[in-house]
Length: 242
Length: 242
DNA sequence: AAAATATAGACGTCTATACGTCTATAAAAC
DNA sequence: GTTTTATAGACGTATAGACGTCTATATTTT
Image (cartoon, rainbow over all chains, first blue to last red; front, side):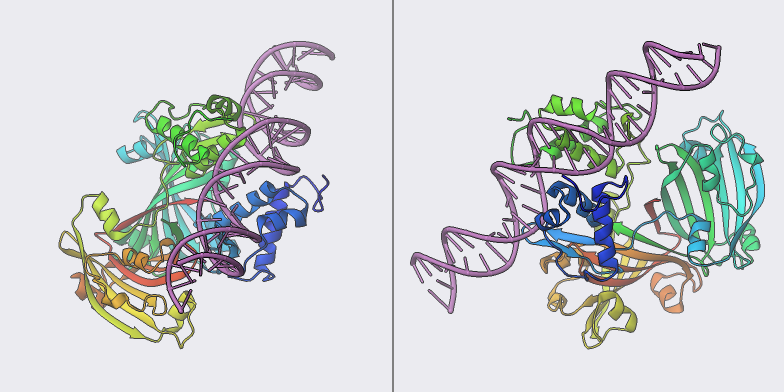
C-alpha cells in the first residue's frame, strides 16, 4: 500500500511521530485533549495500526502524550512531561542558550589510576589514566573546575589534540566513542582552598559537586570526572521517574 | 499456536523479558555475550518474532542489553547500563538501606498560591494550596527541610490524615494519585538562618537545594516542593542520557 | 432511584509474513 | 596480497488481522 506521507528514507512511524509532535507543539492538539484513536490515525495516514502505535508509544515515553487503556490517548501538559533528563555537553548547551562559554586546560598528566578511577573505568592498576583539569568559563567568569580521567588505552593520542574551548566528548568521537550515558552523584560541598582559588570565591562557599562515570554508546566506560561548580552560578534540572 | 510458557494472565513478552532478565542476572548470560537472535528466540519460545522483540526492546531501554543492527544483541556491563534515574520515596529508600528515618510535621496552612506555585501546579490565584513543612531525620539527625505545596482542590481532606513518619506520596495514593515523575532543579546554596536553625548547622553551610514539581501517573501536577538538604549528609545519584 | 448488566470504543497482546538495511565475512577479482 | 564484490545473518520497518482487557456509558433490572 502506498503511503500519503512518502518522501524519503524516513520510517513511517517517525514521520507520524513527528507529525504528531508538531501538532502538539504548535497547539493544534492542546494539553489535555484526546488525540484520535490508533485506528483512526491508521486510517487517516493509510498505515497499519501497529505503525501508528510505534510512533505514539515513543511520544508517550518522551512524556508528550499519556494514555489509559479503554479510554484514549491524551496530550500531556507542558513543562511537566515534556522535560527530560538530558546529558548536556557544556558547549552545546551554552550555545543553545546563547551564552558565551570557553575553557582552559590547566594541566594534563598520565599516571596510574587511583583505586576509585580504576574501579569506575574498569582498569587494572597497571593500566594508566590520562588526567585533564579544565577550567570552564561563562561570560569570562570561572564556573566549573573539571577533573577528567580517561583510560590511556583508548585515547593514547588525545594529548596531541587541541583541547581548549572544545568539549572532550566531541574529541572522543574521533576515537570512535560517542558519549551516551552518565551515572552521576551530586552533593553540595564547601569549596576547598584550591577550588576556591580557581573559581575566585571564598573557601567554604557552596559548590555543587558532581562525580560522574561516563559511558559510550556500547557501554564502554570512557571517562570518570570530578566536577566542582560554583553554587551561585550553576544549577541542574533533571527529570526522574518512579 | 500454543506457547510453552503458558501459565497465567501474564503477557508472553513479559515472560520472555523476565526470563532473559533472570538469565542475565544469574549470569547464565554474561556481560558482553551475544544473546540468541530474535529469530532463534522466537523459535525457542514458540512465539512470533515481534513478541520476542517487544521483550528485548524493553530490556534495552532499561540498559540491560544493547544491540547493533546487522550484528546482534549483547548483555551490557553491570553498574553502567543497569543503573537508572529513580524517583525515590524518602522512607522507601531509607528502608531499603536499613536506615532509621522519621519525619515531623512542623506546620500546615492553607493559603492562596504564590505566583510560582500557581504556575507550577496550574492553579488560578483564586485556588488555594495546602502548605506543609516537614523535617526529616536520619538516625535522629535532621537532614532535610521539606516545604510541600499541594492543590487543595485535589487533597481537601488530607489534613485529617496522620502525616508524621509517612511519605506524602503514600497518602496521595488514597486520593487516587500515584506519583510517577518529577522535574527537579538542583543547586548548591548557603543555608539561610532559618534553615540552618532547623538543620542544626551554621548559616552559610552548603545545602543541596531541590525545587521540584511532581506529577501523577496521568500527568496531573500534584505537588510542588522546596527541599533543603544538609550538604554533608545528603547526596543524590542520577543517570542521564544524551 | 439504585444496582446490575450489556455494549461500544480504545488500548493491549500476539501472530505470520515480507522486505529493507546494516555488518561482518567469505569469495572473487585484481 | 589487496581490493572489490557477493552473501548470510541479524536487526529495522511495516502490514493485516485476531482476540483480549479495560473503561465509560447506556440499558435493563430490581
